[in-house]
Image 1 (cartoon, rainbow, N blue to C red):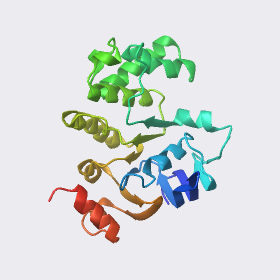
Image 2: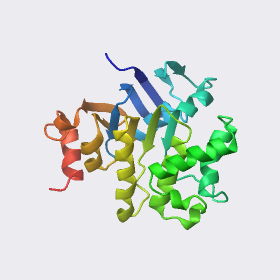
Image 3: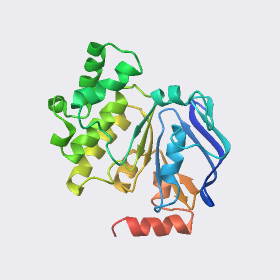
Image 4: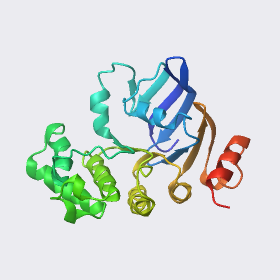
Length: 247
């Protein structure tokens, strides 16, 4: 194996009461890998990546991120989140802070950067997501697509080793989806390790190294896009693709 394993899950189970959200999930994410996780609603996709940065705790099995084992109450979770960026469906920006303030608050408070250091980093990443001119605006003054690009830049300001995306375009109007996906494609092209939960199969075909298909809390199929989109092994994946892809 040439590249380091960033995330290693072994036989992960997760329950919500009697409901088994994750069922014996095993998965490895390597440095620089772009993994897309897809599947029907309720299949455990979001739960899985929320476990990857400690927002959810698994009930059994083993999960290691950056070589550190995570478990409920793990003291390393806070430090880990500095290295694992997360972009959600909702943008979760502070409405009373400007874009620049939203981007600098984490590096100043958590990474102990000076204000000038944090602002320089923030402006660099606002350039990366193509909205440097929005730095002094408030979130309510931006479109949904712009807000999501701010959210991506905010995660990048923490200089993470891996980025997790939980259906980042699902709350956007159709005409705004492309601008966010374009930024994610550019980010993938820089070599960032990415795990993306999405139904945007055009993006997946363009960016993914690995496709993971989940159903009922289980990983049904893992394959490169060239195989997954042309010759999926499972009937369930084939049906999913038939429903989601335009024919």
